[in-house]
Length: 223
Image 1: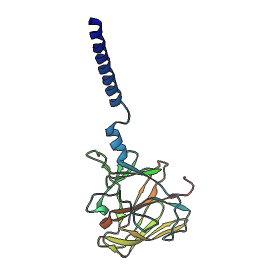
Image 2 (image 1 turned 180 degrees about the horizontal axis):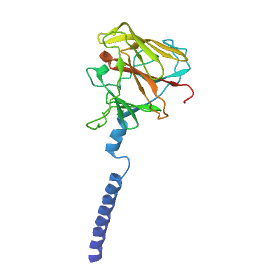
Image 3 (image 1 turned 90 degrees about the horizontal axis):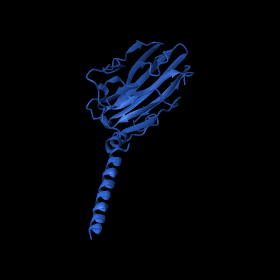
Image 4 (image 1 turned 90 degrees about the vertical axis):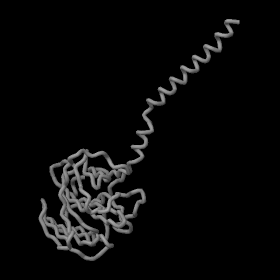
């Protein structure tokens, strides 16, 4: 009789050991819920290099790349309902150095090869460097110089209550690049690919519908 009592006891103990091992193995799997949630919060967008569009006239030896476009029916764009910047003043949001690229509005991370949108804002340090931008906020039609040439912005009309259209012209030694109508245009330069040469960037925003477009101008032979 005693031998029969030991058998159920051994089965129960071995069963408990298996459950314990299963729990430990599951908790050590790379697909942890926290990791999955973080991965799912990031959207990846590829660049449209050497972008061609009737609103862009390129008579220079430079190349125009479309890095991001969430502006509906503009430069072949379509608004993505997953994109939202959660701000009352989108044109006021900074471009900042962050990790391996530039971060706009604490959501859009621009790198040399692709762009990432964080549905959950990444954690930022207390102090982070901001990239200065030139814009046409007061409709003064500014003209200024940059590393390789000159640029002018001209107010051409209203897009919505808080967004204007600007005609942007960049003059290089080899020729001009003209963007006929860029919303709330702003300009900055930065060497994102670390090749010793600054690229030119044009950022367009429309606050009323939380839309963003970003263009990059660079040497055609630097792909």
